[in-house]
Length: 227
Image (tube, rainbow, N blue to C red):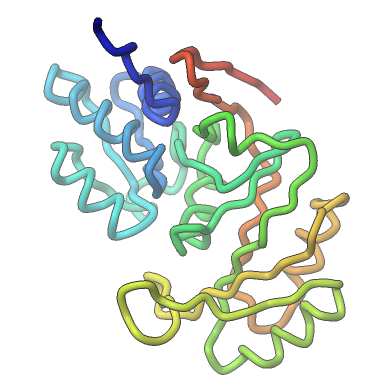
C-alpha cells in the first residue's frame, strides 16, 4: 500500500507566489524557509529563460540566489522594486511579525522599496490576534535602555542568544537582536509607531504594509488573500 503523498505547505506557498514574477522584474528576495522555496522556484524559471534581478535581504538569501543562478543587484541600482516576496513568523489582518531569521531591518527596507509586498506562509502562521514576540534590532550600546523603554510599553525584551555560538545573535548589520514579548497585541499599528520612537532600536519586526498573502495548506492548496 502506497503512503499518501506528503505535501509541504511552505513549498506550495513559496512556489505559487514565485509565479507572480514576470520577465524583466527586479525582485526583493526575503529570508527564511518558506521564501527559500520561492527563490529556488525562481531559479528554475531563470534557467528556463526568465530574465530578472534579485535584491536579497540577508547573506542567506544572497547565497541561495547565487546557488540558483539568480542575478543579484542592489537598491542603489534599483531603488524601486517591482515585487518583494518574504515569509512571516505570524500574520493577522495583513500585518506581519517578522525577524525570526534576524534579518527584519533589511527585509523591511526591501518590502517598503517594492511596489507590491507579498508574504508567503503556511497556515500555522495565520492567527486572529498577533501574540508572537516582536524581534528588535538594537544597537549594543543601547541594550539596557531598550529594555526599559519596552517595559514602559508593557513588554519584556531579552537578548536573543545564539544556538551554535556563545553569546548573542548578531544581525547582518552588526547589531544585537532582542525579542520583546507583549502577549496579545490588540493594536499593532500603535505598537509599530511606539517602537519606532524608542531610542536605540534600529528597526522592529512589525510589518504593517502587506499587500498579498499566500497561505499554504496541508492539502497542497494555496489560499490567496489581497489587502
